[in-house]
Length: 165
Image (cartoon, rainbow, N blue to C red):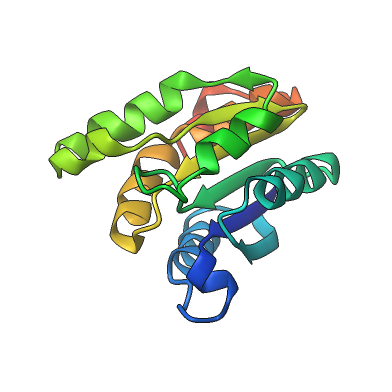
């Protein structure tokens, strides 16, 4: 599996802020999955830049794209809108599960506008920008991702394979 990690942050893209969520996602994926992070970038909160990056990576065959940042209420938080521009099918159960688990930790989880969906054979999931929330969300996602990605790429699978992550 090829994984893309896209951090959306105006300050991060300008070099005024060190991206911590992208490296954390990479570390967690490298230690808990056999997958390779093949694409990483930090881009500003610009809808066309985000959408064009998602399209390019999906068209290059990236199987999973995790975005970080831009999912809240701030005026520049437009990651869900950019994601909706490029996905062909929404996968609401994923973000519903992330919000439900996050609500057990903080009421602020209900402010998430994150979206998840499919473009071709690529699964795109919006995640929060906070490293703490990224870790919590990945704990929810990692058990289901092998099966989801196998279905998406139409790979043969067995029940026992889904339980190994």
